[in-house]
Image 1: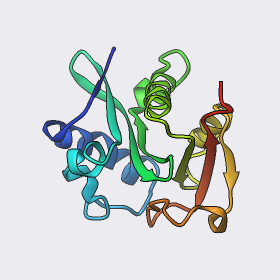
Image 2 (image 1 turned 90 degrees about the horizontal axis):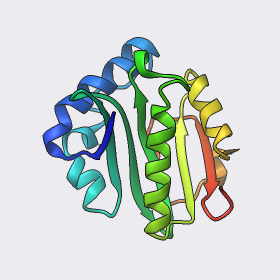
Image 3 (image 1 turned 120 degrees about the vertical axis):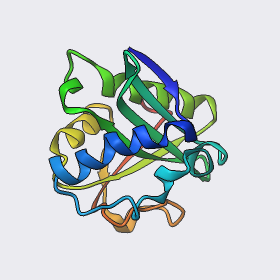
Image 4 (image 1 turned 90 degrees about the vertical axis):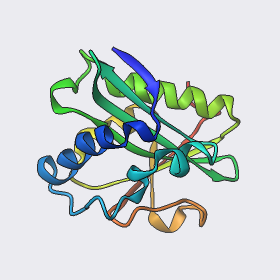
Length: 163
């Protein structure tokens, strides 16, 4: 298993991983048109001081996590997806991707991490809570947090208090 930074050369592989998980596995009403960031990873994530990482198994993309610099020492976590066959503690892919992103965010001086998700993603919610995130109400989100239209549940982590 290898984790590396993704770029625009990886867009199609990212789309091929994420869209079926969203649309087919979890029935989230979201399309590629709703996610133009997936067509330009470099502009959407990397050039603004964020990141986008992928885990590969023998050259196949099996997991992703992305991070947007929202300003104000705040980052927004996006696009955390792991292929169904690679989920679970025995693989540890989600944790390794999360740890990579958290390390990056700390090194870059980010103190606050937020993310949005949907009710269907129960295992993801448990994962975030195990990693120290707490639920926050939509009205408590900072105005500069870049919300995705489909998201209705939100989480927060202070990177200075997380071990």
